[in-house]
Image (cartoon, rainbow, N blue to C red; front, side):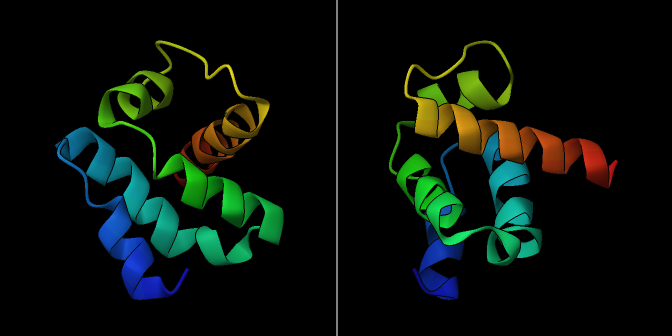
Length: 81
């Protein structure tokens, strides 16, 4: 996915998601392995409510690919703090 489309896909209906997804796309996406980039792109197709629950650590995705990319996002946030 090109950078502009990725940025647009990261803009969600919830500010909390924007504050997580946009910085991740800007700072970490390009350093991911191709398989993880595809996982992130697939994650962006999920519903906002599911994303919110996963990224706020209130639920864990059932899909192992989504579990992996959510974990990567969590780790990137803890490293940037």
